[in-house]
Length: 295
Image (cartoon, rainbow, N blue to C red; front, side, top):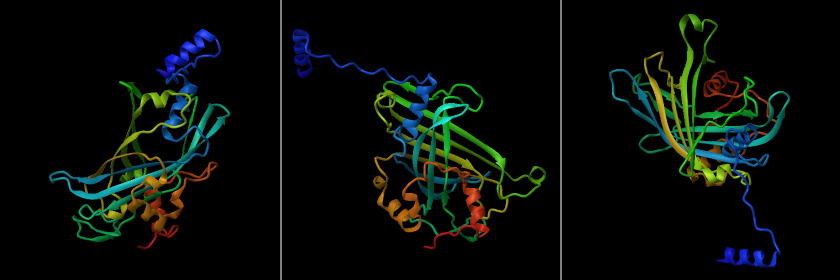
């Protein structure tokens, strides 16, 4: 009623201009696709911090035996974006982030310090995932020179984005003869993001809330000391983009504040360090280059 009254006043008196509604961002237009990606990954406001959080379970998969529920897992990624103008790839943004993945006891859900390997009966020290940094960049042109396109889908007022990342590269823990004896790191990471399409495509909004799904299939963790035994690990998790870092569960926040206090915020926006993977982190710890917090 209030809108209708306002309309009649404007029509009769010709005293105002009715509001117009902005056009939606176009996922098939490179400049708009970059904005859509920036909103879904972080924020179009440079330096505004965003936190993603997820939880789930990790299982073993070996021929001839039932899958074992080895761990509960809980993770978070804190990040920020900054606009960037690339000399050959056009306008875009750089994303800087840190991430943690904790392994918890499957029965008590306590964060593990040690773990008894059910295949070797050896008790080993657990090394949680603590990766700093995990950075990336998106521009109007990809590395191939083709225009960037948002690869998500929209239907019934919702958006969804599936990202599959097959990984196959020389294992950081291997030597010079990996092509002769094996030792290639082989894994796959699968991401699902889902949210409200109106929020995502509105050029006036700076962020887009999303639910998150993450699946990972990989080799045994090096700290498990599996000694080349056949088999794999898979993790299945779900989470969401949080309203703030403080919105994380108290147990997760306490763990970070106690043992990883630098993970309360992302790296600096001009961070240009090489990305860290969990295998590289293990190598740095094993070589004494980096210390692990003592519980």
